[in-house]
Length: 106
Image (tube, rainbow, N blue to C red):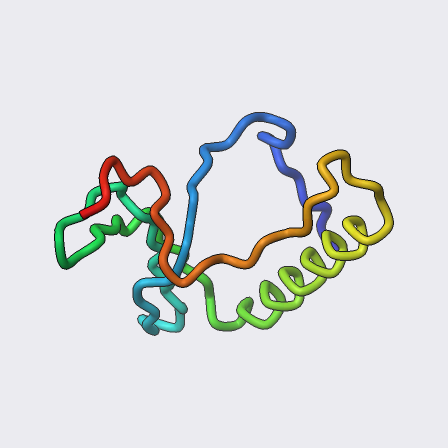
């Protein structure tokens, strides 16, 4: 098995604040997932969102990625249970309606 090398490991990577999945479809053996983020712009009847990133995952790798994500969540959950947090606040669930960065409410 070949050694995996990450030449940019430890360097900053761009942050994206994702709050949902907009579209998912299959194309040429790849699972394509379009992620969305709130833009902060609202009208009286809509919240505008941006399609912020597109993940292109080979279907053959989807199960591995799913397992990796489950493992990562298990590690985070176990670390939160085993360490004392300074603010002692419980993690909050993502609310149904988010107004992240909304400049005004109508």
